[in-house]
Structures are given as structure tokens and as C-alpha cells.
Image (tube, rainbow, N blue to C red; front, side, top):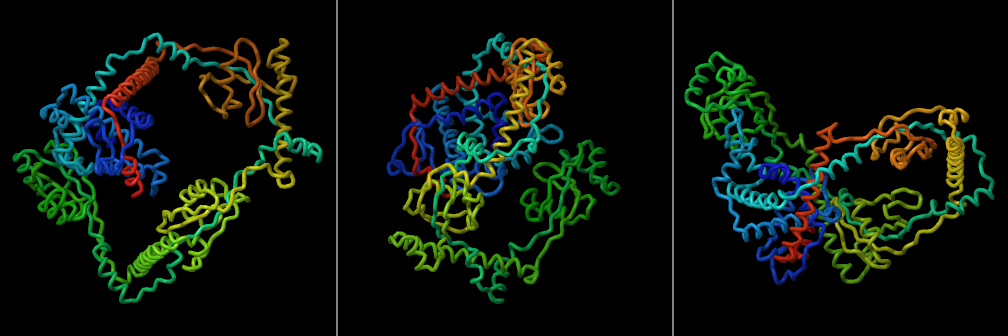
Amino acid sequence: MKKFRGIIVKTFVGILFGLLILSFAVWGIGDTFSPSQYGNVVAEVGDQEITETEFRRSFGRQYSQLQQNLGGGLSSEMLRDLGLPQVVLGQLVTRGLLDQQAQDLGLTVTDDQIRRVIFSQDAFRDSLGQFDRFNFEQFLRANDMTEATFAQEIRRETLQARISQALVSGSSVPDQLARMLYAYQEQRRTARFTEVPLPPAESIEAPDQVALEAFYEQVADRFRSPEYRSVTALWVRPDDFLEEIGISDAQLAEEYEARRATLIEPEEREIEQIVLLTQDQAEAAEAALAGESDLTALGEALETGAPINIGRFSKDALTGTLGPELAEVAFSLSPGELGGPVRSDFGWHVLSVVDISEGRDPSLEDVREELGALVRREGAIEAVISLTNQLDDILAGGAGLEGASEQLTLALIRYPALDATGLDREGQRPGGLASLEGFMQMVNQGEPGEESFLMEDGQDGYFVLRVDGVTPPANRPLSEVSAAVEAAYIEDQRRQLALERAERIAAQVRLGADLAKAAENEGLSVQTSSPMTRFQRDPVSTPSSDFAPVLFATEGEEPFIVEGDRGAAVGVLDSVIPATADEDSERFQDVQQRLRRERANELMSLYLADLQSRYGVSTNQVAIDSIIASY
């Protein structure tokens, strides 16, 4: 979808809409209405309806993209936490508002304008720069669209782009404001500084009991235990039933025959081609094939450009893509051999096979172990489903976890103490937490004594739990954390000594001493920093990530002290390097563009808010929740 939007809208408007769509979802949207009244409608925007099908299609597309980016499965709870339902709804509502505004304004886009948009896109051009219908159809298939729906989306996006461009075209940013911001952001400073290292830990005398207790009283909150919850859980998981699933040789043979079509891996070929646009070129190619075995050389001779690698295909897949005649030719060639020319709707194709991956038709013995594990797993999942149906009925009858455990001979698992992240009092994660995120969400939300719903664990299993009790956060007794408190005491003393030493150096500078001389009195040397901006956070080349902010808060010759992981540092301002817009026009333009985008976003947000109040927006949260729950 991102590529699709990039094809339709210019860069500025595309960025603008991306930001605005997200911000719209943050505002919150209108009222809610009863699902019984509106059936399969997810939202109403003025007199337009957003259907469940429309929402599901848009949500599914973005869900797939998110899944690819993050990897792995995403539960419905995770999708809610990420805010994806609100983002998708915000996009559809924003589109509906702008659609109605375009209609009210009488804006139109002609078929000829749509055709010009399509023909102008580089993604649909061939090597000669001409519109290539093959590339166009590949794009439609990849985005699960027809020509009609694609044209409809172009019309909608073009109209919305016109509205946004008209709205923001008059907005401007004063040049002086941009110059002031650039000067503020790009000003650089250098500092002379000396680092005061932490003294060695072994040089600090361990505290006696009185000192340890006094220190503990000051820092007791550092050693505060989190809230802990005691939990009883009942799990039903496929792994618990695998050993009970038996498979006979006859059953395995039957499964093999039933699944054989899915086990066969067809031969695949990686194909390159050149496409000839005229009959003369095709005849010239046919004449040249007898003495030419290199597709690149043939392309150069016929001035068609370099060959295009169209990918790796099975014979059936290539038939569906280029047609049966081309597939027959491609699968009759040896690697490096040329075939064709073969005519299609796109021209005359000359093919070459780059590589061949042999197919595989495994015997039962080849896949016995793999197939057996799969069948046992499926049997275990069926057993889980059957058992969870019984479990659900038993829990609904009020038997509770203990009663359900006894009736179904399922073991209860008790967790004496779990913090919000699933760790016990020793900082370990107990075994058996098949799906930590979903399980802990129910633990943290549960009220003591209440049983949760029967929930999926993300691994084909189910769980139900009860929070038995809650232990509130509390300071741990010194006897439990004495070693950690002593280590903290020693670290605190090291930092204190480094700061005291830094303060002695700073005091000498305040009295008029040069920083180098004051540092020398402490056996230290001075160095000069590289130029830095006020936003720099670099604890490697500078003594602390706070060094730049403190430096930019300093004026004149006043010394400053910063703490860092390595100890402390004393610095003085060395030089101020002003920034002018003329010295780096590219960076200045970046500042201007950012200000314009922010101004445009603000205007569009206000505009959408006005449209929302004018047309009205209502949502069916029950329908939305039902769709999300299916993931």
C-alpha cells in the first residue's frame, strides 16, 4: 500500500497524509452506535458507511505489513497495544471525510487524467521507457486489485491530494523564523575540560553496620520489591497429548496419499528474457538464434536493452504468468540455451534459462518422521479443542479451577509470586508460561479471586487463571539486600569523591586560576572537545551524555561540572561557532521544509476536525472488536 500511495501522490502530500492520518486516529472519533441498529457497518461518516468488509480488507493489508516488519505472529492484544485498529479506522474515516468534501465541492477526475497518471509511473515502464502492461498487471496482482478498483483509488487519492494541496499551498513560514531556528539548532560550541575518574572500588573502605543502616535508610526505595501476584493456572496444550496420539502404518500411508500433492516440489526454473516489440525484430532474432547463444549479446545486437530476470517459476506458475506456449519453450531449454521468439500480448519473447532447481517427489519413507510428527501434532490439537470445550462447560457451571482440574484430570500450576513482567522473587521466569505476554496481561488485569476467561496461548493451547492474592510493593529488609546495599554504598562513595575533587578544581577556576593549572594541581590534564551542537548526546567522545546541554547553558568563563559513567568532569566554554543559513543551504532547506510540514499538518488537523464536526462520525466498536478478535 505504501508503494501504491507513492505512485499516486507527490512526495510532500504523501508525507503530509501519512502524518495526518495517524494524528486523526489519536484524536478519538465521534460517537458510538448500536451494532444491532447498523448491522455490518463499522462506522458512519456523514451519509457514507464504512463496512466490515472494507475495514477488514484495510486492516488485513496493514496487519500483513506489520507482521513482515516485526516477524512472527501478532495476537489481537498486541494489535490493540500497537494501536493498529485506531490507525486503520482513522485512515478510513479521514478518507470518508475528504471524499464527502470533494463531492460537495464538485471536484472530479476524468478517465483521461487517470490514464495519464498510470502511464506516467516509472514502475509500469519497460526497459525502453514505454508503458509495460505486464508490469502493470504484476502490480495489480501483488496488491490484490483490479484495474477498476485501482482507477477508483487513483480518482479518490487525486481528489484528496487536490484538497490538501489547496489547503496548504497558501501556508508559508517566515524566512526570519527559519533562520532563527537554524541558528539555534546548528550553533556549535567547544569546551576545554578535564575528566575526574572514579577512584578504584578497592580504595573505598567497606561500611560498618551503623553506616550501612544509615545509608540504607536514605536509599531504601532503590531496593523496593515490586507488586507480586500469586496465581493459579490451568493449561491445556498440545504438547501434553503428543505421547497419547498413536499412528498406525496404514493411517500414515493414508495421510501420505492425502497430502502427497502438497509434498511434491515441482521443478523450478529461473528465467531471463528480452521482449521484442516489432515483427522485424522478431524475424531478426529468429535468424540470429542459430548462431547466438548469449541473450545479452542478442539484446545488444537488436538494441532491446539488457535481459530482464523475471524470477524463478514452476511450469504451472509460468503458464499462469506468461501463457502455455512460453512455458513450454522455457521448460524445453537447457541452462544457457535460447528459445523463441514466442509471441504474446506483450510482444515477442526470447527466453534463456539461468538455473534449474530439480523437483522432488518424496516417498513415504522419505517423509515418515516429518509426516508422523505433523499428524500427531494435528491429533493433539484436536484433543485440546475437545478438552477445552468440556473445560469451558465445566467452568461455566461454576466448578472453578479446582473442580475442573479434578474432573478432567488436569494439573493445576501455582505461581506463588509473579511481578508485572512474569519474574518471581528470585528474578527468574517460571517454566510453563507458554505465552508470556497474553498470560501476564490477564494476570495484571485480574481481580483477586476472579477467574479469567479461557484464553488462547498463541501456541495452539489454552489457559485459564485466577489471581489468588496481591502483595503490594514494599521495601526489602536490609538483611535480604545487604550485599547489594554495600555495593551501592561503595559506588556512591566513589562518585562522591570524584565530585568533591571536581568541585576543588572548579573552585580554583572561579578564583581566577586557569583550568589547566587547576587540573594539574590534581594530577590531571585538559583537553578540548570537538565542536558540538546543543542536541548532541555522546558519552563516548565526551565525559557524559549531559555534557552538551550543560555546555550550552553556560555563559562566559563560569566552570561547570557534569557527572558521567566514568566519573565527573569540569569544563569551561572555549568557543562559540555561530551558524548562518548561507553556509549550508541544504541543511537550511531541511529546516524550512520541516517547518512547512509542521505548519501544513497543523492546518490539515484543524481542517479534518472541522469536517468531522460538520459531517459527523459514529463508530461501531463491537464490530471492530469482533474483527480484531479473529486475529
